[in-house]
Structure formats: C-alpha cells, structure tokens
Length: 232
Ligand SMILES: Nc1ncnc2c1ncn2[C@@H]1O[C@H](COP(=O)(O)OP(=O)(O)OP(=O)(O)O)[C@@H](O)[C@H]1O
Ligand SMILES: [Mg+2]
Image 1 (tube, protein in one colour):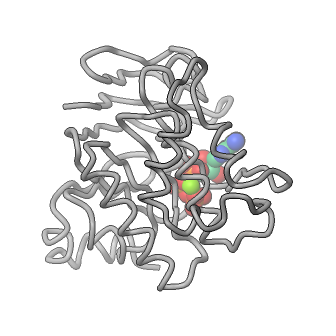
Image 2: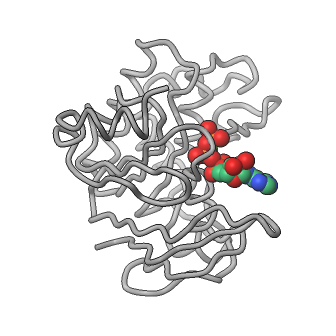
C-alpha cells in the first residue's frame, strides 16, 4: 500500500466537507475518484496534500503525513496536479518544466528527455511559449511539470475536462504510461469514460464520503449506484 486515508475529515473554516474518507492505492495502480460536482473530490486531494485543515490519518509509505507542511509532503514524493492549469504563459514549455524540479535536482536534461518520451507533443513544443499551447497541450504540460518532481504517487484532478475526445484518448495513454513506470495515480474525474478504461479500481464519492469501491466492471454492473451518485 503506498497511500491510505483513514477516517479523513476536512474543513473550510466552519464548513465540514469530508466526513470520514477511507481510500487506498497500491503501487502502480490507477485509482479513480468519481462523483458529482461539489461532493469533495478536490477537497480530498487538498487534504492529502496538506493544503487545508484535516483530521484523520493519511498514511503514505507507512508514515502518517497528516498535518505535515505541503512542501514536505511533496518532498516525500506526493505530486498534485490541481484543476486549474496554472502554467506560466510567458515561459517556454521547457522553462515551465524546469520549474517542476525539486531543489537540488540533478540530471535535468536527462529528466526532460525522459519526459519528452512520454509526452511527444511537448517535445515538439519545447521552445514555444506555454501560453500559445492548446488546452490539451497545457494540460499535458501541467501533468508533465508535476512529474518532473519525480513523485511516486500523484493526484490528477479532472485532467480531461473540456478536452476533445481525441485529446482525452492521448491523455489516457499518457496516464497508463506513467503508471507502467510504477507511479501510482489517483485520478479525479466526473465522467466515467476515461476512468472505466484505465483504472484498476474506482471509488465513488457522495457528500464527503466514499459510497462505492470496486473494479470498473463492478461499477458498470451497478446501475443503481450510477443513478444515485453519478448520473446527472
Ligand atoms: N475554498 C473553499 N471554501 C469554502 N468551501 C469550499 C471551498 N472549496 C470547495 N468548497 C466546498 O466544498 C465542497 C466540496 O468541494 P470540492 O471542490 O471538493 O468538490 P469536487 O468534488 O471537487 O467537485 P467540483 O470540482 O466539480 O466542484 C463543495 O460544497 C464546495 O462548495
Ligand atoms: Mg473538483
């Protein structure tokens, strides 16, 4: 088990948003966290990352990281790609990637070459200002930048939102390639499509709690769960 949350609660001021979230991920797994708008998927990522106050346990590689500072959590190997694609538009693709490196990183050119292997679109755009990239390329850039920090576990929040089906397919392939290298992925999604194709397991969240856990095919075989917690 690389990551496990136990009875995780989280708060925005007085508003209690997560009500005891239990989830886990094994090394190299792609685990999806599904749910409708506002159920607490992004909040789960923020709580794991130490960005908001929480209660409960977050066990990462056998150690409780709950309550630690975000930069220390990142240094331990937890990566986070938030919903907003916060790239630096005036910097080139390569410069944006360099910003994802950890302090003291070595073999920088090698790391970038390795990443360009997984992200051929970015390789072609290396010297281009990030601001002129397409939406899909910007999403790839934010994922790639997080990977520059060499995380072992990465949370990716709605990477396919607003993207064309062809680009969604490209991102699916990229996520599989990342997982094949042993990186564990917690994929936050709203739509079933990509998660059903690439996940080893899925969680469905409803009102700040996990309401279903199983394999993609088990979710496909549970129309009641889908109606109650996913379909709009
Ligand atoms: N910064 C914030 N301050 C106060 N409440 C917040 C804040 N961010 C989120 N919330 C509330 O917490 C709840 C969970 O939000 P969260 O962002 O985790 O939802 P989500 O499942 O990621 O869905 P979506 O991304 O579609 O909004 C929602 O009711 C939301 O309004
Ligand atoms: Mg969200």
